[in-house]
Image (cartoon, rainbow, N blue to C red):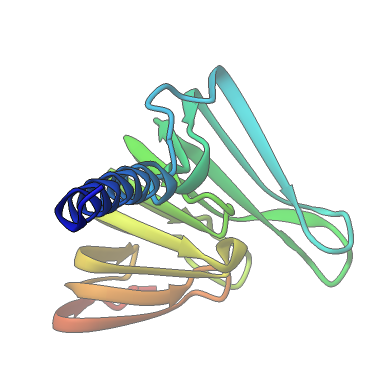
Length: 194
């Protein structure tokens, strides 16, 4: 064999080795980095009722509605016409409805720590002996911390029999009746006549 034939075979062997490496590299980059996520829901439920309990095992909230579609992973759960009831334990150990929320659609994230109510959202805080009823209306409302805190960055209207307040953006604690509007706030109060 001549030197030229040896160099030719070495070049051919190097080329084949490079092509094998390139094929392996492209195959691992194409399929290894992509997690295959199903496009079909993992669970579909009609007439759902989801109950959430606090650390003491007491009922904290109930979420009901006509249709639920759950996906595995980051997609979470999509809810149709959800109706959320948040309960509060009184000092005398009686359970009362702290507030309720309804909307046309909602999304529950994968670890159930955030509920996003969308389209025609109404949060209602019923009257008690020492407080008036309150209603918050908006197009999108985020419910954080198992119902302790709410927020939105859209237009809201907060109404009560004696006042209304409108603005852009809100952070609030509906169980305590505390709300902070962020921008373009407008309020009107009416005094009750005896």
